Structures are given as structure tokens and as C-alpha cells.
Length: 394
Image 1 (tube, one colour):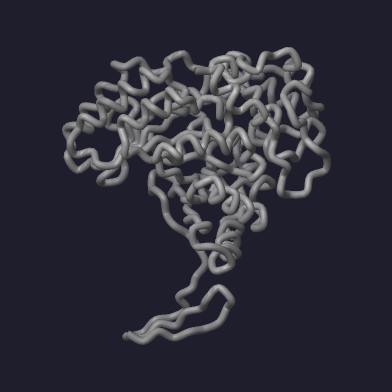
Image 2 (tube, rainbow, N blue to C red):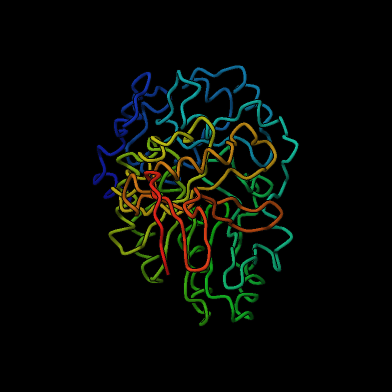
């Protein structure tokens, strides 16, 4: 199967030419990087090989990119659970000379992670407080979050769950989920289950299927979702075998984490096409990040590129106040301005909902421009996206 897939995408490791102006052209092929020049295409397309050969040290990374002092110090300090881990695929997308590269900033630790802001918390969304069983978060009345694993292919430096996510060897044997599954079974109000992590697609097909099968056996669960970033950071994981397994449990929705247009390469597009062609509705979740995607034209480009690969923009998240991420956070006004520049200026399908996850467990709270200027009995004064005023009478 790996050989057939590698043949199908022989030339797909070429990075799509960035739509945004860049200071220098990125590598076109992994074999142009000395570290990978002798790697067989069959190995490159094997997601297990990609995981085994992730970049985890200064010594490895410095062979590929010119590290800054802030990065070298950050990598040395990023030990333990949230250490650095970059897939070889993701590494091919990094500009080796530009420290402001959006791909680089999301994956390479910097010394700024050790600078804790005054309002930052270990668990800003209070998930541990709202956990009635191991691996489970129950906050909203009819839906739960099931954290299937602690591992990801690449560790995003803005991660909200950095207290949980990382290279811990407890990857979730089948019986670890039993209490969570029984809790869902016993609560008939639960109709929606989101399987996330970590990244659930890091599990082997058989282990993931066992979990999905258990949840699908619960009659009152109507809506099943998987939250993943692997089509972006490790698109080789989207194999024919995985897709065929998931199809057995349709309908199943897939939420994918995208942050920047440069993430949408030919290889990423193929992974998303495999999922979309198999009937899985795809949605995107994006974290608003300072210096990465906080300009309206970048976010608009991302939303347009997502629609081109049949991924529906869903959420833009304000970066949570988790410890060590203050250098990524923007003012809330930045997010509101982005929505202002999208709503009415482009397709409605390209306009996600901007939300703040209420610190302390408040849940997702939508935030946006104010289009309702005043209201009285039966009279509403509104403004449109151009700033023109209209009155609606009931």
C-alpha cells in the first residue's frame, strides 16, 4: 500500500509556491536537504518513518536551518513533555534563513516560551476541572471531548494542552478509555463526541478503530468528530487503509487545524482530497497568532485556499492564555478587525466564527464586529459591511 501511494504522489512533495511574497524561495524537494538526500521515496511516504525521524535536537536542526540565539536557547529549555518534535515533511516547508517564517515559528521553540505572562495559566480552559472520567471533558450539555492520546506528529509551540501533550509513553491502551466510554453510555443527553488529543490519528488504525467502534455502539451518540492536524503536519498519515477504516463509521466529521496558507501544499491537498472524496465533511480550526496570521490579507488567503481544497472555515480562536505563549497572543481587536475585513468582502463560506475560550472554563464565546447599532420597540438600526446605516422595522 505504501508503494502504491508513493507512486501516486511521486511529485507531490513539491511545496506549492507561496501565494504571499517571501524573501527567498523554499526548498522544492526533500532530497535537496542534505539530511534527507539519500532517503528512499517509499520511506519518505511512510508515516511511521516520518515519526521515527522527527527532528528533536539543536544538533539535527542546525544542519538544516540557521538557528538564532533565541531559538537555540529555547530548544535547550524545551525538555520534557513539550519538547521539540518536527516531522521531516514539515521541515521541508521551513525557510532556513528567515526566523520570522510562519512555519518555523510554530514549530521551533524560542526562549520566549520561558517568559510567563501575568494572566497565563496551566489549564486556561479548566479542562481538568470538567473531567468526570480519565481522558474525558464534559462542559457543554450535549457534547463531550475525548482525549484519545497525548502525542502529536509535531508539537505546536502555541499548544493549549501543553500540560498534557508531549512525549509521554502513555499513548492510550484500549482499556484506558473504558471509564470515558461508560460515562458517555450512561449519559443519554450526550449526542456529540469529539475525539481529539494530542492527535488521535497518531494511533494505529486498529487501536483507533477500537475506540471509534465503542463510541458508535452507543445509540444516543448521533454526531462523531475527529480533531486532527496530521493532514497538515504529517499528510502521509492519510492512507488508503485509514480512510477505508473510517468510512465504515460514517457519518464522521473531521476538524483540521490550519494556521497559514503556506501549510496548504500539494501533499496536504492530496491528503484532504482523500478524505473529502470519501465523504467526510472537513472543517478548519485556526489559532490567531501574532506575526503569523494576524493580518487580514493573510487570513483571507488562508480561508480562500481552504475552500479550494474543500475544507470549510469553522473557527478562529483567540490564542488561549496558557503559560509560555504570551509572545503569540494578539489584542482581541485584531481578531475583530479580521472578521470585519472578511464579512461582506468575500464569500460567506470563507468567514469563520471568531471565538474566545472563556478563561476558567467559560467555553467558546463568539466575538465580532457590532452590526446592531441600536434597538427599540420593533425598530433596529443596523450597519452593513460598508458602514452604511439601515433601519429594520418589525
